[in-house]
Length: 115
Length: 110
Image 1 (cartoon, rainbow over the protein chains, first blue to last red):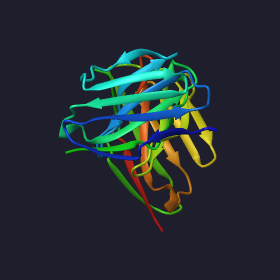
Image 2: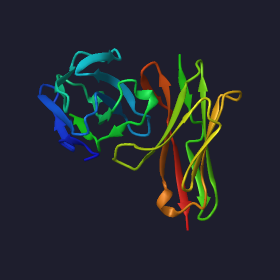
Image 3: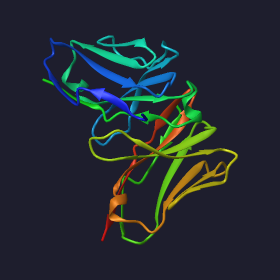
């Protein structure tokens, strides 16, 4: 299994809602990532988990809250989002937490719309 | 700040020709560069990784180069096909994470 699975594929939420994005991989990878991608822009790194511990937070607003319950799962909890947070949210994983040395496996993403 | 730049937003070529995409890095020297393909509404898919001490790497119709003097990587697709139409992202090491350029959207016409 060489897939990273993200659910849901699409999500529409209001600014007062609380929702969660989920990501799962069964490749035994020890690093997992959340990226945010706006239309016609590159993916921007949000968070990195290394061996289930948060290792990088790229100054992301607290309305985004990541969680890594175990080595296969990664969640992104959303609360009180703004319309400008609408984007494609991508999860990725890599075998080695020193990601730049090897390839990232990306999921298909969750297309989020905040109304 | 560390930057990966892909200055061509779009590249249009005819089927059978070689597509050449450019990636430049500024304000730092990445030890590794990676190239990904992204189709609309999908996550990026890894294509090739090249280290700074490697001049060139090949995989089937793909070739990537790394020129530390010019601070540039070139990505070539030979004998291009309409199925190669996609956005190609260049990613560079920044600490222990990967940062991306804006991407170049390649359109191959038959």
